[in-house]
Amino acid sequence: MTENPDLVTLFKALADASRLKIVGLLAQQAYSVEELAALLDLKPSTISHHLSRLAEVGLVNARAEGYYSVYMLDKNALEDSARRIILSKEMATVVEDVDLDAYDRKVVADYARPGGSLRTIPAQRKKLEAVLRYVVKAFEPGKRYSEKEVNQILSRFHADTASLRRELVGAKLMSREGGGGAYWRVDE
Image 1: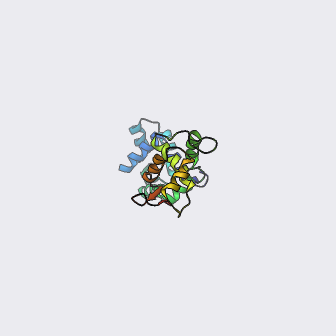
Image 2 (image 1 turned 90 degrees about the vertical axis):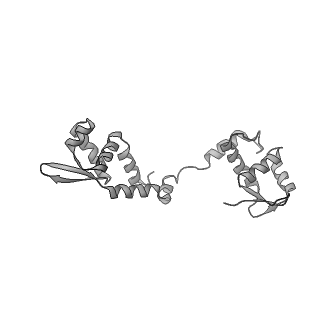
Image 3 (image 1 turned 45 degrees about the vertical axis):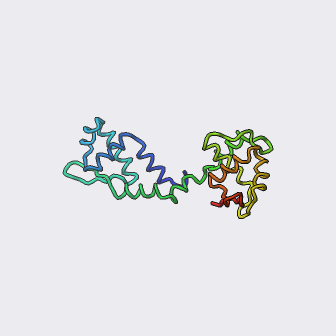
């Protein structure tokens, strides 16, 4: 998260029910501090605090009208922030330090014996997919295997090679030619 301090600051600014209500109200029209305080049944000082937090991230602007400052939502800033949030490149940097294989390792550790063979084939789909991603690593990318070779490799993991073979093809981790032809690992 230290890679994206602006994104963290934006989420923190929006992580308050009152501030979200203020953003919702300002999306419809401009309001003064006193008007917002009356609408939300909060003290003007509390509204001023919330507005300053929203202004820090550039979501709110103020203009003077007589004795009052009137606040409005900067819709362009909000749209820009939303675009930054949904851009996969921006969000990818947020999860750079997350171990995306941790779940698979945990599931495999739960289902595999110390030698690598499986105690059982998981019935739950998510866990089965994690085990299949583990099993498919025994096959070289780009190499074609006969059904007999596939069964020999799969027998190292579990006696029910037919189920493993069928599930690997069903999960699109392996593919095969019809009629008992060759099998191969599908590369992402």
